[in-house]
Image (cartoon, rainbow, N blue to C red):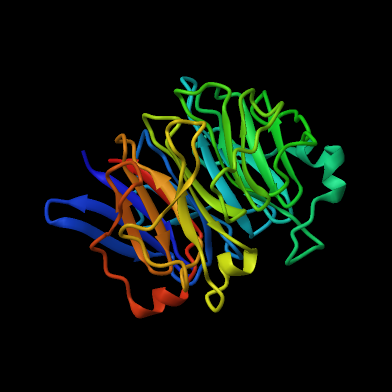
Length: 338
């Protein structure tokens, strides 16, 4: 089985695939400021990339060529999140923007509909992204792994909201939930469980977001960003963390690391260092789980890393990493089986 990886770098997309001799990487969508990427796991040559300033793009040949989609229907050129909801009735594509708006496509990106009721939520009056406080954006869109009609949307910053009818109507945030979710996950083997890696810490919900817990024993860094859950073990979780947003995202002040949860859910989180670059000078990692059990990937300004032992130890992937990448902050990572 071939593994395919897409990385949204600061100024381009890296499309990486496993070959007999190792890994093959191609660069595309140069100078477009990619923000997010999603691979269609039923048709792995198909992927979507949202950019800041150049709208939403689609490839049908694994990144060799891209075509703009949603022009004229997605009214903002700043597309900050993209997600694919898979069901027996066909895939739905969701795209989120800055200013906050959500769009849905039933025809593989040929046409788009705005989910207008999202912006009618009471909490929308307080949504505000700290670096640009006059606006906010959709940071993450998570289609539930067990119920394709359930959709979770993280607004940066201010809310984690949900829909039970594919985006037609919405349920507002709950007071004890995460305020600033950066990455959200569901898992086929853990129905109703939500995982949130947020600027205000790590959160889990056992009941589709009605109530939340904050298991943080061992987590000495509380600004979290990346999150991945083992494809075959819903209790094996990794997160990326820093002390502050500046240390997470600024090349000059970068200082971050990765934590792994103990599979005994009552035990402590553990900081992971084997095979990874030291925290100083490392921007906060984007994380992804391989469809094969026990395999994780991470990307930051220092390179792309993989783990085949459930996140315990890591190695640098043999992919060219030009000097200019050391000064870039990757914004997204997606992995699928080809």
